[in-house]
Amino acid sequence: MLLAIGAIQAELSRRTERLRRYLASSVNADMTSVWIFAGALELPSPLAVLLTVAIYLHLWGRVWRQQLTRPAHRTVFSASTVILACLAVGPVLGLVDGETPFVDTSPNLRGLAGVCLAILVFTATNSALVMIGLKLRNPDSGLAEVTGGWDNNILELATLCLGGMTAVVLALRPYLLPLIVLPIVMLHRSLLMRQFQEMATRDQKTGVLNSVAWHDTAVKELDRATRQLSSFGVLMIDIDHFKRVNDTHGHLVGDTVLKHVAGTLENTVRKHDSVGRFGGEEFVVLLPATTHTEVVMIAERVRRAITALVVRDHGTAVSGLSASIGVAVYPNCGVLVDRLLVSADNALYVAKQTGRNRVVSLIESGDTG
Image 1 (cartoon, one colour):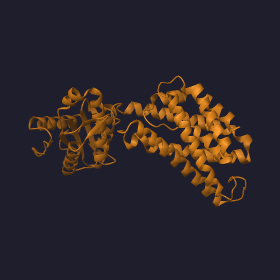
Image 2 (image 1 turned 120 degrees about the vertical axis):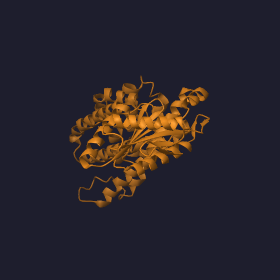
Image 3 (image 1 turned 60 degrees about the horizontal axis):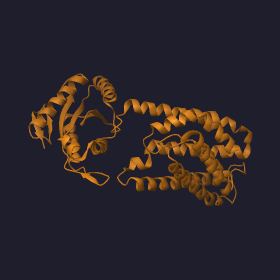
Image 4 (image 1 turned 45 degrees about the vertical axis):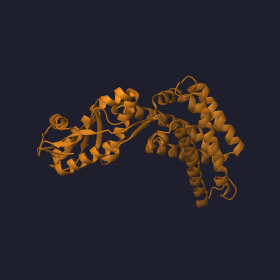
C-alpha cells in the first residue's frame, strides 16, 4: 500500500520534481522519505529494502531518467544510502519491546523515544554516507555543499516526521493513507516556489544577494534607520587585480575564487548583515545599526580575511588576494541608498588610487591598511 500511495504522489509531483532537480545546485531533499521511513518503521527490513528499491526505480523511470543532472549512478548511490539508513533503523526499533511502536495505542513514551531515535539514526546514517560520497567526488567542496545547508536538513527531518505519522496511520487506520497525499504534493510545490524565489534574489555564481535584492534590502534598512534615528553602514569591496586571476588560471577558477570570497564575506560579517554582488569582482555589504567606528572595524576585518584566503580548485591554489574597501555611513554620507553607494564607491576609488588593499572612509579622510 505504501508503494501504491508513494507512486501516486510521485506521479502527481512529477513535473515539480523535474524542475526542482533541474534548478538544484547542491544536496536536495525529496518527498520519498515520507514513504520509505514509514516502511522502515512498519515493515520487516527485507520488505523495507524492496520498498525503497521500487520507489527509486519508479522515480528513475518516470522523473529522473532524462535529466543530465541525475545520471544512473547517482540514483543508485542515493538508493544505497537510503537502504543502509533503513537497515540501521531496525535495531533501534528492537529496543522498543521488540515490536513496532504503534501496536499499543495507549500512551507510550518509550515508543515515542524509539521513533525519535529512529529518525536521528536514519538521518545520521544517510547524511554521513552522502557527505562522504560528495567529498570523495569533490575534495574541495565546502561544508554547505556536502550537507545541503540548514534548511535542507530541517526539511529532511520534517519529511521523516511525516513518515512517522504515516506509519501510525498505516498501523491503525490504513484506509486514511490517501489523505496524506495531497498535503505532500502541496508541500513539494511550495519547495519549488521557494527555489524560484531564491533564484530571483540570489547571484547564481556566488550565492549572495544579487544587486536588485541587495538594493531592496538596503531601502528597507534606510526606512528603519529613518524611523529610529539610527545609523547603518555600506561597504563597497573590490578584489584587487582580479583580472590577473582570470588571465593566469582561467575564468572557471576565477568564478570559484569569487564564490569563496563571497563565502568569506558572509562568514566574516555579522549574521544580520547583508552581502551582495554589485557586479564583476565588486561586492557590497549592508551593516545595519552600526556606527562609523564599527563599520570601519568590520571593513578592516573583512580586508584581513580576504588577504588570508587560499582558494583550492582541482589542484590549483590561488592565494595572495587582497581587497580595496570603501566605507559609507548613513546619514553622514547621504540620506538615500544610491547616494550612499556613490559615497562608498568614491571611497573605494581613493583606496585603489592610494595603493589598494586598504579601507578608506571619506568621513575622516583617512585610511587603514
